Structure formats: structure tokens, C-alpha cells
Image (cartoon, rainbow, N blue to C red; front, side, top):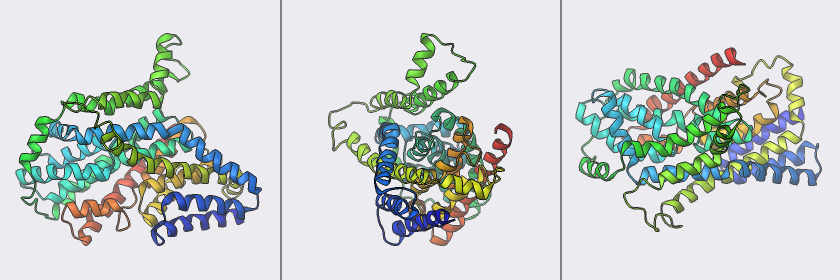
Length: 447
């Protein structure tokens, strides 16, 4: 019982440290790891240090380059105007009258490599211009975009959060992409319905501040739609192909073709292939773009924080694992593991709501869940992938005043705080719960 109480105290400490004391998450996670290890009484001081080092180094070795490469792809897509080009093409596909659907879809695609905060800033002027053009409330377009971005930001690699969770839970990244894409499409649909049925009733004027001329110039300079899509989807296709090739039936055989697919589909290799094609997005690549102060340098700085937090999450998880907490939890849950796929979701949702950051919620939850996978009956490759997606779904619930994304969406959309709670907070609750129910139904069928 003491281990469970201590775990609860560690989680409460992480929440208070990151919200009230304003500590960086990496400090909060490290302090929690050492504090839990010392107070649990199950490990020597030397074993605690070994656990922290092994957890930190192991996870960074697995996913560090993957997160870094994903950040580079996202930065080049953003800076080159490729995101605008994708938005323009999506609008042509769904029609000018379906602006919320178009913004939801483009948010869904762009947020796979681009952080949702940055992507909303990039695409918000376009959403305003289109809302004004078809004379609809900007609230519908803004919320459709926001929830579309959130769907893949939390559940589909190579977004850093899901990549980190997959590394911590040792889940197959291809399976995470497959299940994450399926569940996130349902979440996207729920978010879109919320936008057109509820958000559209609240009128927010798409003011005349949007620089349509500047956007058109940027789109004119942007790479083609095909070139913009390749850095996003080619790595995903390679990773998924490798996962399919590893099926017991060996669909690609066991010869040179299978060996090549297995190599190219390694997450590190696949993402580096994506980086190569991302470097081709600007009209002219310069050494300045590749410098420490250029586009690559900006991507490295953005990725470094996520990588460090992920490493500390791995350290915390390793200490929990070595403390023997899984046996304690198993004694309370019994063999039925009745919480199953809901427990990762609930823990992530509680952490997200309490401290605001989806990425911190994902990484912290993954560290907590790792030693419990066997107890919950989530040890198979498919179960581990579903657990990662469940954690991502929980990290959507809910975006409110302690979440920076809440202020990005409400500020750029000219929403009042009250409107933000009605639209952004309620929308993320509905989207996250829709994803959780979908996951539960899937788990009943495949587990």
C-alpha cells in the first residue's frame, strides 16, 4: 500500500512543481524519480542511480533521433509554406462551402510533424480569410482547426508525445501509427461535428486583419502539394510497411526485398528519409537554413526540450519498474485487469487536466503504466500500441486555462475566456472521450 501512496504523492508533486512552483518538467520528473526511489525502501542508493541512468539513456537512445528528425520535417514544412499549400489543396478537395471540414482535415495532416501550437498560428489567418469569404462564424473554423490539430498531435507518430510513449512502452511504432490513425479519424469526426453543430452557433467575426495578399504570395512561393505531402507520409508508409513485414505470415517474403523494407522502415531511417525530402521543400536551400541559427537549429532547440523530458520520464518509469510496484497493483486489481485500456486514459486525462501539458501528461503516464502492462493484460504488440494511443487520447482531456494551447486558440480566435471554456475545453473533452470509447470497442475485438 505504501508504494501506491508514494506513487500518488509523486504524481501530486509533479503537478504542483510544474504548475505552482513553475519548475521545468525535467526537474520535476527527476526529483520525483529519486524521491520515490529513496522513500520506497526497495532499492539501494546505487540501484536508484543505475535505474535513473538506464531509464534516461535507454529511452533517448531509442527515440532521440526520431523526435529530432520529426521536428526538422515540421519546421521545413512550416517555413517553406508547404502547410499553406496543403490547406489550399484540401479546400479544393472538400469545396469552399465546407470550410470547417477543410480546416479540420488540414489540421489533422499538418500536426503529424508540426507542433499544434505552431500549426494553429500558421493556419489561423487562412481560417479567418475563408470564414469571411463564405460568411460563417469564425468559431466553427477555429475550433475545427484546433481539434483537427489535436487529434494527431496526441495520437499519431512522429509527433513527439506518441513517439516518446511508444519508446517507453516498447510498442511497435508502425502499429501505433495504424491504430492511432484509425482512432484519431474518429476523434477528428467528433471534433468536426462539435464545430459545425455547437461552435457554429456562437458568432465570432472573422475580422479584416488577415493578410490574404501575403498568404497568396506565400502559397505562390510554396512547394507543390505532392512535395509537401511526401516528407510527412513517406516515413509513415515505410514504418507501417516494416510492421506489416514483421507479421508471422511474412507478406514480403524473407529475401532481399523484406530485408530492405525492414531497414528502411526502422523509425530512425524512415524519419531521416523524410528529412531529406523536407530539405527539398524550399525553392532554394541555403547553408543558413542548415545552420545552428537557421531552420535546422530552430528545430533542434524545439526537439531538445521534448527529448530531455522524455528521458526523465524514462528514468521515472524505470525506478517505478524496479521498485516492484507492478506486483502491488496486481494484488489489488486481481487477474481480471478490469480497468484494462481505461486506466492509461484516466491517468493521462487526470495529469493533463491538472498540469496542462499534453506532452508531459503522455510521458509521465507512460512511465507510470510501463510496469503495469502485464497486470493490465496489455503486453502483446497490439495491446502496447493501443495503450500508447489510449494515453494520447487521455492527454486531450481537457485543454483549459493551464494549457498554453488554450491561450493560443482563444487569443488568435478573439474568444473570451468563457467562450474558450465552451468551445475549446468542451471540444477537447468530447474529442478525447470519443477516442477513448473507440479504443475500448477496438480492445474488446482485438485483445
